[in-house]
Image 1 (cartoon, rainbow, N blue to C red):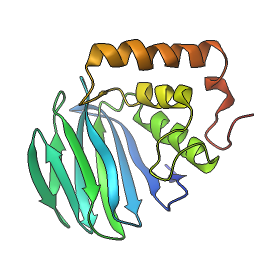
Image 2 (spheres, one colour):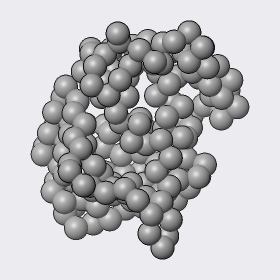
Image 3 (cartoon, rainbow, N blue to C red):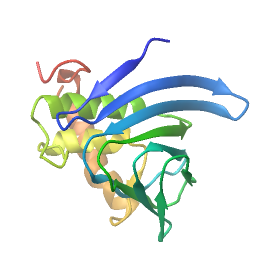
Length: 180
């Protein structure tokens, strides 16, 4: 499989390493190259999918289920389904492998997020400026923000995502270009 690389303006590169199914089920394996220290994911959880991160270079700091874990080269950290997790890179030029099981829409999420970012439709911290784009990104993450009740997120962000699809806003974004 040829490498598929998703890029962001800040230099973050996501490379698809593998996707498929093995004895444990469907998976997606990505490599992240993070050029600068900073927050990578705020507190969130996924009802179904699990994630594992293996640090290849640099340092990551995780908070998983309220416990802080610092990971360096060779360390693997896991977050089971329904476990609140967040993390940040603590060193420049951090490289990590990221496994998602089952992958659900995570690859689509990174592709959409990159298209928004490259079009200048996100803030410096990567948050979409348009509430419809934010709602679509929320929907693609297949999870919930930890600090807002899930029902409220489904009502507000899920409702905005439905509006984005109904009005054609969602169709205007592709993996290679901004809005048409």
